[in-house]
Length: 200
Image (tube, rainbow, N blue to C red; front, side, top):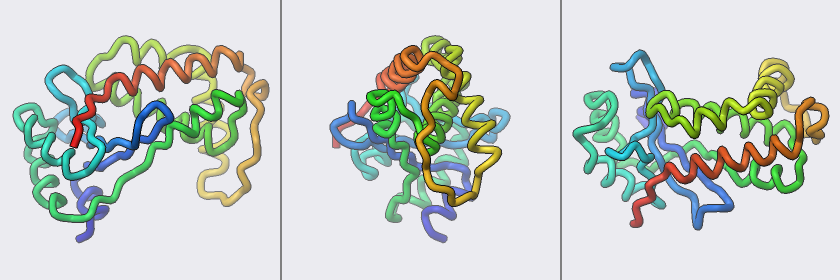
């Protein structure tokens, strides 16, 4: 079995997050905790900060250090033992795509899809840790409108299509573009502040 197959089998994945605010992309682990009603979770430390590293090998070492508080420990340790010596395959979250959209105040299909995925990821963290700031930010009316618009106009209608990525001007979202961009940046900043980046 390859890395991706093992991740799928144990519902545990490596995510690589890139952002204009980070010196370089960081790796985190995200999993479905079968011992807790199949809740999606991050590997966090005792301060409920997401364990992040700038390289995969250091990430594996950091996870071993928090062994007593691992979510779904049997499944997670089995996954860890199987993938440790394999070449990592990760899912990329390109937050700079959102950050660039915030600067231009123009979202397209790709950036709205990234926004949906990111808002969902923040929701997983909030559900896991009860983070009030993240919850408040991701439920701001303009972000909710963007999320709903994305599902209604892109995800449900165009999933699997090979259409060109055409710009979608924010007024078409029927939301306050200034507030939306401010709120999205606040959510990105708050999430990045939850990363505990261990240096390699």
